Structures are given as structure tokens and as C-alpha cells.
Image 1: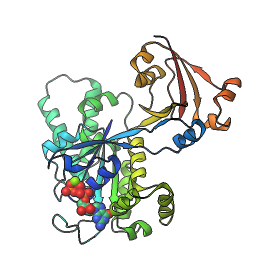
Image 2 (image 1 turned 135 degrees about the vertical axis):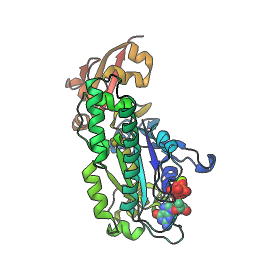
Image 3 (image 1 turned 120 degrees about the horizontal axis):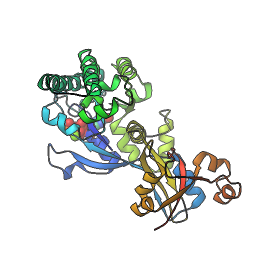
Image 4 (image 1 turned 90 degrees about the vertical axis):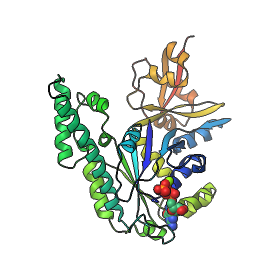
Length: 351
Ligand SMILES: Nc1nc2c(ncn2[C@@H]2O[C@H](COP(=O)(O)OP(=O)(O)OP(=O)(O)O)[C@@H](O)[C@H]2O)c(=O)[nH]1
Ligand SMILES: [Mg+2]
């Protein structure tokens, strides 16, 4: 599962990507897509570390890809569109700050205009594809599901709506997945502000960005690229004091990573102990047996039972596995159990 960072040129994509992943863009040549993993902040991990004092701590991560810039109208070439399809979600970075030292590709563009340009490009690219499919395969037999989904996609796109904004049922999902239209992906809108805008949350285009976000179900993250660079150099305590001045509790990078994780519909389960406290990433709706396979294929193969307690219940019991066990609060779950976000799991297996 991967989120692609895209947007008009000089909007702040690479700065965001570098701070998220620690990967320097100088490694890649111009025009290539760089990949890296961003740590997903999690207060629960921090609590678990206090309790278990492990030798090692491992956070969940989310895969990010930094794309080369789009033109000033966010034109999507066929090549970029197909490269973006390798991503499960998109983060569109648009610029609200007007810092003179950062040039505009042509003339200044308000962030809502830039975002709706991108949205239209994505819709147009899908519309072309849907029409080609519908025309090319006129006499080809399609299943009723395919026919219905394609028609509905066509309707939405003609109304300039992304496919993601449609209401889809379980029968539609496999078809949508198969065609992999760009606008069927969830989108995060990341708005690069200057410091004053971050403080006042007043900038041109904010209201219409919020309307677009609401209409389509796209979350927004507001950040200030240059401030994030400073925050990145501070220790935890300094960060907290600094962020409080902006009425924030988390850096833009942290908010972005969390939002990307949610957008990709990922959840975490934990394994705990003196050696390691670790978050493991799974898609929501993953069974206990499959989740075990994340740790090791042997554990999946030899799966017997999962001993489970949710983080919330664990904390309510004073953070003691011993007490949880004594009180019978460690549930034994079978292989079909659907793992919940925050489950602390000990897998019992046989090799
Ligand atoms: N003043 C100011 N400058 C910023 C901010 N965010 C990014 N920049 C600067 O803007 C320039 C472009 O940032 P990048 O992160 O490289 O933007 P990009 O979208 O990756 O650019 P391309 O890949 O060339 O399209 C850099 O010089 C950054 O230092 C910000 O919040 N404020
Ligand atoms: Mg860049």
C-alpha cells in the first residue's frame, strides 16, 4: 500500500517527502519517482514502551512516492497517469504561501484552483479510459456487474465527479479494483502555507478547498513546509512548545503520515515484550491467521490461536498482561477473527 505525492511544480512535494521518509531526493535523477517509508506516529506505542521498556521499538510505516512536478495546469500525461496507478492513494500538494523566493511556474495560482485543476485532469483521464472501454468492447460480453459499474463511472465522470465520490457496494468493488481508474483512489489534499497562514488559518481558497474536501470525502492537511524543516531539527520537548504556539499538538509531517495511513485503510496491531514493542500494519478486515503471516509465514502456517487484548482494555487493567491473564481478559481467538486496530496479540503456533 502506497501513497503517491503529486502536484504542481514547486508546491512543496519533495520537502514533505524528505521530512516524511528521510530519503534525499538528490539520490534520484530528475523525472524519476522516489520511494520511502514514513513513520506513523502512535501514542499507544509510546505508552507501551513505558510499560515494557523494550530494547527495541518499531513504529508502523507508510510507503510514500515523490512524483516529479506536473505543469502549471496540473496536466496529466498518459505516462504520469499510469505511473500514479501504481499508488493506492494520492496526496496532492498545493501551495498557498506566496514567498517571493519560490517562483511560480507561470503566474500565482490559488490552492483551490490548483487542486480543482488536478481533479479535473484526473476525471478527464478516467473519462477517456471509460469511453474507450465502452466503445472498444461494444459487442464484447461483459458481466452485469461490469456493465453497471462502467455506466455509473461514466455518469459520475460526466458530472465532473471523481469515481471515489460515488457510493459503491461490495459487488462493485472487485470491478473497480480491476479497472483501477485513477479517480477511484482516495486523495489527501496537503496545503503548503506560510507561518502566518498556519496561525490564522486564513488564506485564499480555503473555503472552496473545504467544500471540495467535503463533497468528495477527501481529507485535508494544512502544513508549512519551511516550519516543518525547523520542527524536524528540534527535540520532542522543543517541538511540543513550538507547536503549542500554533495551537497544534502534532507536526504537519505527523498529521500527514497519520492521515495517509487512515486513507489507505490501514490499521495496526501490536506485539509487546521486553525485547520489542512493535506495531504491525495490516489492511482493516484482515484475519488473525493472515495477520500472523505478517510476522512470519511459519506463524501463519502453524497458527493455533491468537491471544488478544485490545490496547484500550489493556490500559484499563493497569497495563499488566499478568493481571489480564489472571482475570481471563486475554481472549483466545481463532484464525477467522478479524483483527482490530490496537489489538495486542500473542500468536500461539506450532511449527
Ligand atoms: N517559504 C517557503 N518555502 C517553501 C515552503 N515549502 C517549500 N518551500 C521551498 O519551495 C521550494 C520547492 O519545494 P519542493 O519541496 O522542492 O517542491 P516540489 O513540489 O517538490 O518541486 P518540484 O518537484 O520541482 O515540482 C524549495 O526551495 C523549498 O525550500 C514553505 O512552506 N515556505
Ligand atoms: Mg520535487
